[in-house]
Image (cartoon, rainbow, N blue to C red):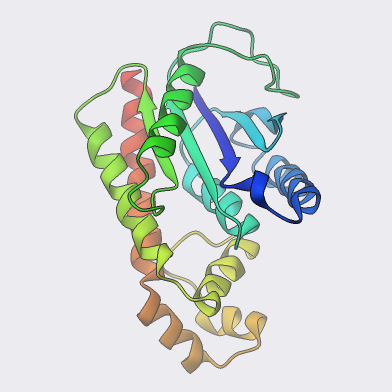
Length: 219
């Protein structure tokens, strides 16, 4: 299983904390609807601004992660992912109270981000019940993609959000369709894609998913 634990960075200092918490609740509801095919136990708030959920396969996991990250933008999330087994029964409707090595690994992962987040750029970290040599590669690739995204302007983030809203998770897509959705020209979209490295970002995240699939089998 793949356990996910996340929280909002510096949420206690937010002037609009109530609005931010409701935004997170709405986002988790959207995630539970859109990714029901890979969710084993629904995402929900566990404590304050912290949330968790359980995923049964990696195919679509990175898209789900970016749905969370860019759904809450410009507020920031940190997310710990744990790969391992479960000691408690899996309740499809609620993940609160679930326990096992997958969640222990996820907790270790999010604590790693809290202690060392590469100047605020790392937002996802993965731990496993049974680490393999490829785990380090996964986390370095996640750090590299987070670094790419940390340099995006709002107009470039808008491209990623448009892709996610259309359910697109590939570097090959009809640019005219996305340009029309965003109300910009195809030339303007091409410039944003070229300057942001979004296609490289998606390709790398897709490779991360495939490597994580191997980690789930090892666990």
